[in-house]
Image (cartoon, rainbow, N blue to C red; front, side, top):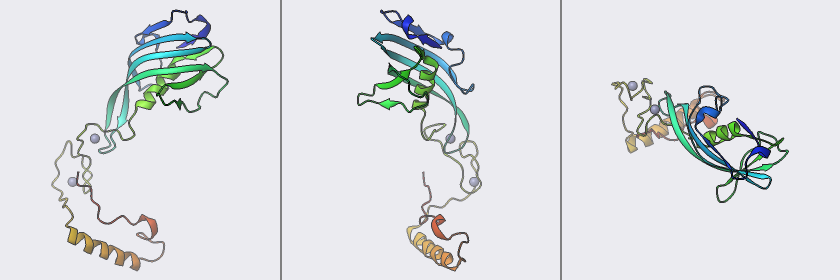
Length: 193
Ligand SMILES: [Zn+2]
Ligand SMILES: [Zn+2]
């Protein structure tokens, strides 16, 4: 949905509900569930405030399962008229007010919804707060199967020995072979969470 800036009434424009946004996202698997925006002119700038809720398919960073993430985003963006490229990064002011640009007298609200949703996505998505991840031995999803693999906590004394053994074996490996150089793992730091 785009709004002609000239046609925004002086009293502002309220946009409620998703009906005005049949295709808000580039990825059709993303779903806009709710939106409430208030668009207001301030000379040649436009303020958009409100909130939205989206559902976005994510892949859990621990167990690699797909899951739908529902996220809400607060919108507080000021649009300035500008000849700036559409895909430039959004600037952040100290007060968290975002500044964006509109061009050709048109305010692209789909792009606003896309940007706000992207900003709300987690860096490391988790299907659930206590996702147990994958078994490092068999690769099974520990949330659904309890495998019998033994994952022993490293004994600090054994860890020291193991590290020594690794260092010796690295030295014995021919140059360029596996285990040489940077891909040597840090000492026996097994995940215990
Ligand atoms: Zn998970
Ligand atoms: Zn296992």
